[in-house]
Length: 195
Image (tube, rainbow, N blue to C red):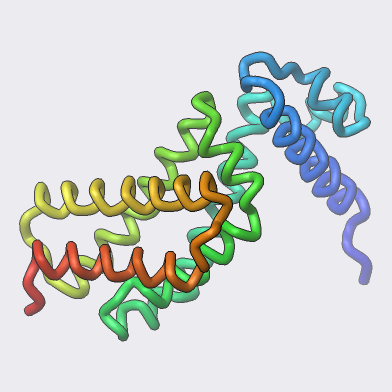
């Protein structure tokens, strides 16, 4: 049985609108982008836009949410191996691969001050997953210490990725992942003790 063609058209329209927004964000600040700009770039009419989104802010939020959902699905898929090995390495590699695959989108969202919700949401996603790992590995009881550590780690990882992009990803991915893994594992081992 064929899927509903309306669903396919709606998904295609939403994808094209997101792509148009991303292209515009490379050239303009988000506040300068109008619905008309987005629809012109996607070669659609405004009515189609409003079938899916109330405005450009909702479109941007939808784009960010889609990306974060995919990152969470990757983490979920690799968490069992990460827990078993007692190291963040098994999850870091696939997440970095995903970020490389979506490099242009991530670079635009990292560099847009108006898209700072994305960076904060990414930080929260990493912290939430990191807290669960810390509890599993170290049975942490000191909530304040855990929050300091996760803040340090997540902003450090985001900064590491931003710098890697800025330098044109000159450092081989395997070296980047290995360095991030050593930093995370070393900081955790120095702050917490395994029981």
